[in-house]
Amino acid sequence: MLKWQKCFAMFLVVLVIIMAVPFGFGAHTALAADKVVVNHDFEDGSTQGWYVTNGGTAPTTTTEQAVSGSRSLKLSAQPAAKVPAVNLFSALKPNHTYKIEMKLRVAGLTKTSANVTMGRIMGGSMVYDSVTKSANGGVLNSKWVKLVGTYSFDPTVTDLYLQITPSSTSTVYIDDFVVTEIADTRVPYTDIATYTFEDGTTGGFTADGATTALTSSSITAYEGTKSLLVTGRNGEYEGPKLNVKNLLQPTATYFISAYIKVQNLSGSVALHGLRTVDNITTRDLATNYGQANTSSWVNVFGIYRYDGDATALNLIVSNNHPTINYYIDKIVIQKIADPAGEVILPLGLSSSTYTVDAVANTVMGVSPKSTPAMIKSLLTAKGGSMEIYAADGVTVAGASSFVGTGYVVKVTNGVETKSFILGIKGDASGDGLADDTDVNLLKDHIKGITLSGIYKSVLDFTPSGSNLTAADLLGLKKYIASLNPLP
Image (cartoon, rainbow, N blue to C red; front, side, top):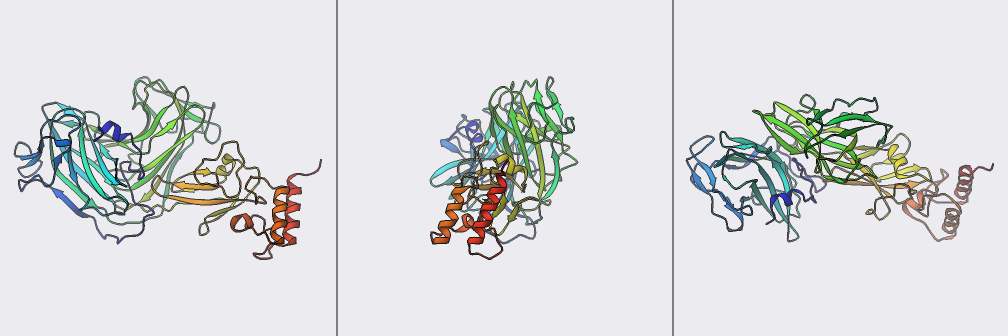
């Protein structure tokens, strides 16, 4: 088994941020109300299926500590690779969303940290998802601490093992381990807030860290002319912080996206939710980790949800290197499920310039010689983040290249992806231009060497129906001439 530090760094076929959600894997019967499917209070004296990995000392039930009742599960101090685990595969169903909660307490130390992961087997290989994580030193010996996360998985998974990994060798007690299937309360997405820093302010962000400084900058921007520059950090989790306590509803689910570019060094970046309960702050991963660099903007995004027992709630941008300076821009928050609701995210695109067909999944009317940045500036991604790929659907389109017919716009929330094929007006060759090559292709089509699909549609210049004729050829020639007027 890998140590949790390695597991936490693995990013995933199913994006599990603190709140993993099922998209695109088919429908299931909706619940009218939340349903408890696992409840381990250990009052019957059994370990209820819990064990220790890699042949560690078996857990026992004990009366030494208990949240309620008289018993809890005790796990004696173990080497780092031996951690408590329980198999949940038979209790959970694919395409459903579950809240996973537990209470932890430590003995032998004043405090420790704990990371909760789900190991899932797909195609014979184990992949680890982060479910939730305590604050640094957030598991105490003086009181019980509650951890909460949400999880989902798709039908390709063949086994599931939940693991709790302490950051130090110590005895740990577990009690009130509960898994609840979340009721289905579907709502369309709702725009909550967007931060672009174009007004020259910090947009409500404050500096976390004694020497951290936030400055409006015109040096670079993802959109517009300004971004927020973060300098003077002395710790991995120091950076710009935004108070969202009055912005986000407890148990509602949100899509969060941000663009980040580093100034001096490369490194991993992400957004976390800082949730404070009883003066203990838990750091929940709110987006995926992105590899930021000095030459381009990286988009980090994900699904976030928190329980109602929070006295303070902040979003913070973090970086794995304490001395990296970076820019942030276009932070977007959308609500995608009402409180206690299952996340059903309506991914899509809209545009006031192009024609977006949500049934055919096409974007038509794009001008020749358009770059990815030009197209993205005229499209709005709904419920996710967008990127433009070459016609193979795999290679990200070059920043300075022309986008051709057949290129693909993908909108993703990290779990589900929806693809739209781009149609460049007059470009049947897929090179992003409208020129003599396309004229010859249309001539060949009229002669019987036929074009099909979107490559045919981009040459339709008349309202004559589905057949391309000499009238379309004339229309194409006139359109090309309009793109290249004589001096």
